[in-house]
Every structure is written in C-alpha cells, then in structure tokens.
Length: 323
Image (cartoon, rainbow, N blue to C red; front, top):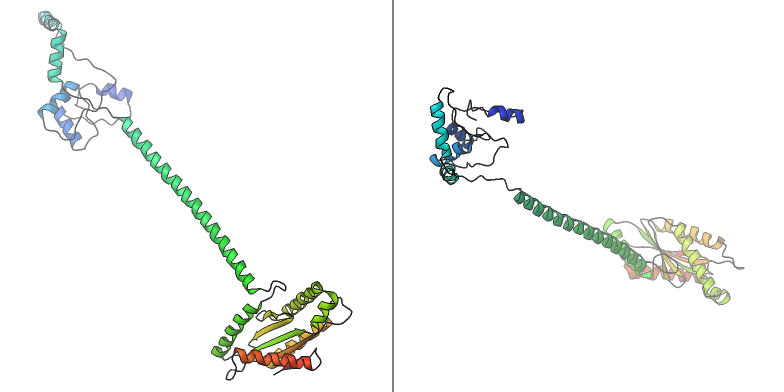
C-alpha cells in the first residue's frame, strides 16, 4: 500500500501476520502487482479505478473489498469558518442523482468476486469421474479374480481328466493307453541315451477259477490287492499298469535283465505270501525281457515278454522266465 495512507493500522490490527510492502504511489503499487513482485495492492476504489483507466495494466483487476470502510472527507483549519461554510453549502447543493453521476464518472469499475461455485462444480465432476474409475477398477478386479478362479478350476479339472485318461478305474494304476504311450517314450529315450530298458509282464494264475468260485467282486478285490503289491514294491521311476484283464505290465528304465529278474522274483514272493483271505494260495506268473537297441521295436519287445510269460505258465505257473 501507499506509504502514510493510514489504513495500514487497520489492516495490521485485524491481520497482524500480514507482510506489508510500502510504495510511493498507486501506480508503483499496481505495477508491482503486475510484475508479480507483490500479491496485492490496497487502495481506495476511486484511485484504483482511475489508475486502471489511465494506464495500461495487463492481467489486473479489482478482486474484492475490505470489510473496514473509511469514508473520505474534507478538513479545514479551525479559523477558516468561511471556507467551511462554502464547502458545506457546495456539498449540500449537490443532489443525490448528481452525486451518483459524479461517482459513476470517476469510479466506473467492476469488482470481480471469486466464483467458488465453479470450483465446486469442478470438484464434484472430478469426484464423479474418480468414483466411476474406482468402480470400474473394482469391477475389473472382481472380474479378473473370477477369471483366475475359473482358470484354476479348469486347470484342476484338466488335471483330473488327464489323470482319469491315464488311470485304470478299478486298480487306480496306469491303464493300457498310458502304458503304450510310456513304453514308446522310454524306448526313444533308451535309444537316444543308450541306456537299458526292461519290462515285466505279470498274469494272475487261475484267475478265472477265482471269479467262478468266489464271484467277480472277490476277483476285483484280488486285482486291486495285486496292483497295490506291484506299485508299493516298485521304484518311484517305474511305471506300473494294468495291461488288461488279470495281466499287469511294469516298465523299468535304466535297469538290466538281471536286476529286472530280481525285482520280478521279489514281487512273485510278495504275491504268493500275501493273505488274500482264500483257502488256496494266489500266485502269478512272470515274463521278463530287456530291450535290444539294434534289434527291437515296441512290437518285438512285447511279443518276446508275452512269450516268456506263457512259457512260465506252461512250466507250471508261479514261475519267472526272462530273456
């Protein structure tokens, strides 16, 4: 504000934390605001209006009024009674309409008030936009979670279907289809890495007599028990499966004919000594053979082990024939 205006006492009384900067006149003060050296210039409405009309200021406007009002007036020395009377008569002779015309001539300015309703509208709009995106984000998260759950359920279902397609439903070991696929893979692996591969074919002795004597339910129980014996007494890397009917096949990778025959002997004894809760003893016959890299394919390998199995049965059953 202009130095020695006297209004600074009022401002500082109501706003003691204000940092007042004094200038020599109104023009200097308004120029300082224009150049953004100070935040605002405080002056009378008449002076501010006059400066705006007579000088070129950019980006300046009268933005508000202070609450405290100071009325302008004349002052004369006590001894100048004649001058006082002249001024009184002159002022009283001016009509209200004329006063308004004078005021409008010299103080023709619009006071721009801050329109907070615009900020409120912008705030509400932004709030609505943010709420919409928050809602969409939540919906997307819920949708993604549902998709993840559905994918997990599909993966579990596919795993179950895969297991069902490879598992014999009665004995819960590998079925014929899975044995065929596994044997083909193991033959390729043995060829590629030049490793040994053996298979054991097992047939339950006189199984038809078990079904005829005790019924098919008891026969199924025998099949399940023998499947568990074979599985529980084989290596983790071996593949044990039901070849068909009462026949079982074991695929043994990286094992030679001697080791495979020893395993067959262990399995034969386990079956013979198992308590099936029958009067007679349940036994099984075994055929064992080893894959020959330079001679065999899948068909010849299976034919040889099958021949060995039937030779074991012809030899009196509960026997092992290996070649």
